[in-house]
Length: 163
Image (cartoon, rainbow, N blue to C red; front, side, top):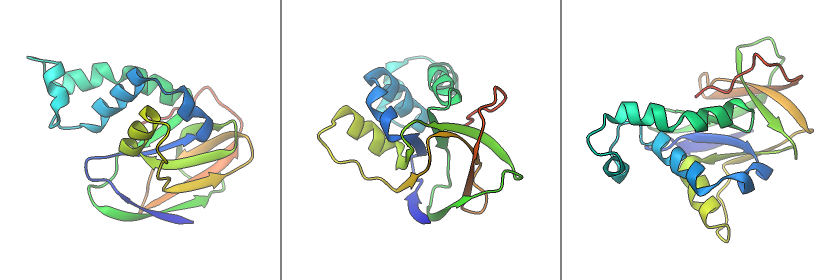
């Protein structure tokens, strides 16, 4: 189970398909700010005379809260095209992330594709990989050597979705 992703000026996103309909224009704007790590896009003109790092930290707090609720995961990846593998883990590894799968259809997409297709639902979203799992909570690993592991778990208040 693998897919290719080019992380150049983009980030990898995992979410349940049902969450896509919950994304507002404001939320997608925050995701766009998050993608622009170095402040190289025209978004900097929305915040004149402000340090981009401060803007990005402040403006993406709602995005962090959304992710920490288990609705989405975001990975900053290498700026190169790379193969990623998805593997079921045993739960004994380094699992720092959590996601809730109400429909059981988890999808990996690029953030730029998610933004575009959520704003224009008539467009067909390019899904990098679809992971069909039973409904419930899952712990996820960070990317290590191009591998993301997951396993079913009980929700814990200590689980965070970090990016």
